[in-house]
Amino acid sequence: MPSTPHEVLIVALREQPGLLGALVSRLTGVQLPRSLKPTDATLRFVKPAELRLDLVLQGGRRRWVLVELQRSVDPAKRRRWPLAASLLFSQTGALGDVIVITARRAVARWAERVACVRTRLGTTLQLKPVVLHLGAAESKALLDERRPELALFAAWAMQHRHGPAARAVVERAFELTERLPRALRRAQQRAILSVLSERMLELLREASMNPDKIPETPAARKLRLFLEAQGRKKGRAEGEAKGRAEGEAKGRAEGEVKGRAEGRQEALITLLRARGLAPSPDDEARIRGCADAAKLDRWIARAATATTVREALGTRTQGARARPRPQGRSRPTPASRS
Image (cartoon, rainbow, N blue to C red; front, side, top):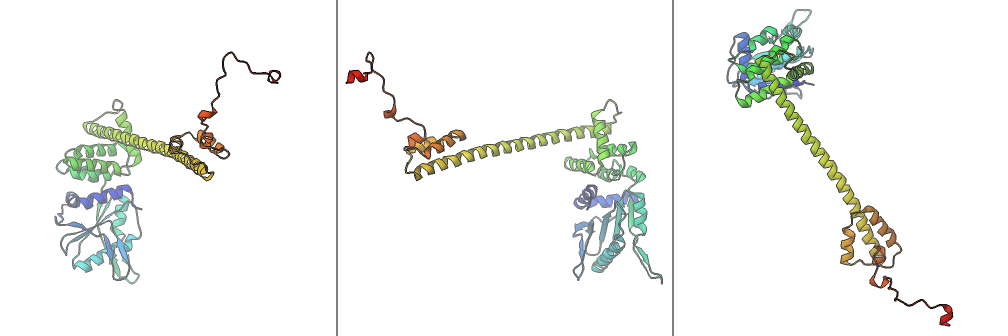
């Protein structure tokens, strides 16, 4: 499964095809056609088979470039790269370039010779790609004030590194990114953070929290301010998400309470009607206005044996009130009545 650094750089190259030309020109001195545009990176054959590649750029019908980002050795590329190049050669009638970009020296050496196959008899099938190894020297060359967009490649090359030199490259990449237009600047800053390892990110966070203990260059300050802004933004987002979750939980709880009360209300009204004790509109309003589950349960229990709705609801009728005893008169005894 492709990693985050892999996908981040592919997206950057797909959205800004000129980045590849700038990278190749900076490291090799060769100019790629400016007309190159992203195309479908899945190559299909007449038979139901296909090759999924990282990126294919085409300029017109006879110019193409196949780009592969390689983080580790993959023996399957021995077959796939020659097959993909042969298919594009057949479709366009012209040979294009296969460019492999890697940050590991061992992978770069492997990529240069992997697609060379020879039989015992001497038949040879060979594809020699253009391998761009983004090492320490290349990373410094990519930190060019005139081409700040190349700083992303320099940071990408640091994805496996964590030392002071790697940190300096990342800080310089952030400093150069400040030269880009606002929209591109934010996108490249996020992309740089996305390609770094967790260990490097932790070192950067530690430095941003202790600027007094660790010497801070202007580049490091820009990075610290960006990390702090990202932290505040993340905190706000987490707070909003927590608030929404708590609100939803509270809403669900209130909804459940209301639902249980409404269920009891309907059960009580249905029971009264089933026993021939039709509640009046005022009675129904009183029942539906009661949200106390315990009280509703008492009403339901009384409704099972009550002879009137008012008895079920515990309401005394006017005739059932106790009459006041007359003053000064005593209750007659059995002897006086006789």
